[in-house]
Image (cartoon, rainbow over all chains, first blue to last red):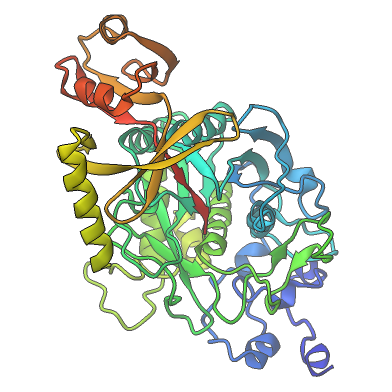
Amino acid sequence: MFFALVFIGCSDSKNIKEEPLYQEQWAINYDKAFYDAYAIDENAHINAQNVLNQYTGKGVKIAVIDIGLDVNHPEFKNNIIKTVNSRDASDDVSCSNSSSCYHGTAVTGVIASNINGIGLRGIAPDVEIVFIKLDLGGYIGDSEILDAFEYAELEDVDIVNCSWGTGDVSPIVEERINQLSVSARDGKGMIFVFASGNESKNNPNDESMLESVIGVGSSDEENLRAYYSNFGDGLDVVAPGGYALGVTTTYDSNDEIHLSEYMRAEDYEKFQGTSASAPIVTGSIALLLEVNSNLTRIKIQKILRESSDKIGNIEYIDGKNDYYGYGKINLNKAISSAKQ
Amino acid sequence: MQIVKIIFILFFVSSLFAGQINYYTKGDTKIYLIKIDKIKRNVKNNKLIFYEKDNGEQIALRDTFFVKINTNSSIQDILKKYNLTLIKKYSEYNYLLKSDSSDILNIINQLHLDKNTIYAYPNFYSKVQQR
């Protein structure tokens, strides 16, 4: 009852205000009542509010490579332009026999949830989604990972979101990522976003640490590096991944146990970790590309690095350190840079 | 952790005596593996043979591997020389190949040292987790 009284929306945007869960989307929305109620640092968000009023990711194509997707979820079913199962090339991207089947739906919801008044606001609600299923959690061959990238290339996507990683990237996968990040998008480079992982360890051989990849760690409600967030020399940026709170997003609508179509910030089973941070960055990049579709992968990386906020109490040397990369993304500043 | 290392060393020494040294090469580093008594089939019904790294991580191999050839080399010559099958061409120089040999790592290591290749590398199957 207390929270119901406190959480009266006070967002700036007419459209966004109508989303009933927008108030608790603390990663992208500073709502003073919610922030105060959960003692969230006032700077824990990514400075997105003004940007979200103006941009929606229109004209940008994103591949989400993940375990499975609820293709009928009302928050993003109209965004899905293609689904591919990398195992058998079929269009079946459903998931069963895993306690993590929700994962792809949660990632996609952070990026693309529509402005429709029924739930939450994705960072880039007008992007086109190509969903590519990989059997995460099981034994996956490097050849299957390459196949997934090939589907992304065939669909000519701009950004690839990978909220997973092997921890030990093989030479040919590394070579392929390097190649696509330069040659795809008519020479502007496909933008790979990889989550750095949640074991609080240095992860030097992971995909997320490649120079050609945007490696994403997590920040928490205190606007510090989340304790679990993997680190390393190749980390680019951090974005909210939560600790006590999760990142509010979508959940499979056909699940017989979890009856809600959403994962709320304060739920026991919350969407937390670098898997949640990566799509925040992916969605943000989509907005940068909407502003300026000619941005190369290298330029996008430069913008994100230079516009990020130097949070935390670890010294940044030449603008970076191993734990925060170049800092926490600041979408408002990044958009300003993209316009120049 | 210390116990795991000791067990790994014991396994490694015993495999030396048994004449079975399993390794692959990444860059210039040889990475040794212990073959473990575990064989599974994956969702595509491919037979996966399991190995363990010195950090305890289990990885699996099937009958395929990657090769990158030199610019002046012919993939056909390599296929013929090692009795291999071409599964997929990724680029002019990168291929996924298949061998019927029962000792796939040995084939990969031979190819890795072949003057016509830049590298040969296993098509490892590892547990990839969402984050």
